[in-house]
Length: 140
Image (tube, rainbow, N blue to C red):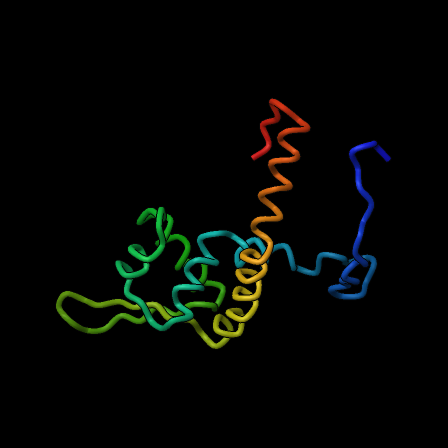
């Protein structure tokens, strides 16, 4: 072990997603790639408060482009987490809302957000310490 390496201080979570050694991923990566990307999380957070129109989502999610929001809601719709409803008006109105499956994800997203807030100072301090110990590193 290197002098700067620290040992594990907490017991492992004991994650065993499918219990089969020959199949450790079991499709988890595919799902986590979707629900773990920052834009998807922010769309889910916003839709947890109720249905939103496209422009409402775009205004609420700082920094997201129209193209990225379009891709994100389409991907979430494809995965069955968001439903897109078109109303027969002139001009047509469209809103997005979470499906039952999408809604079941909100408690996990909230838990992650709560954890992030609770540990943000600790993480920021760890980053400063790492950067001090490794001047010139390009890890960000």
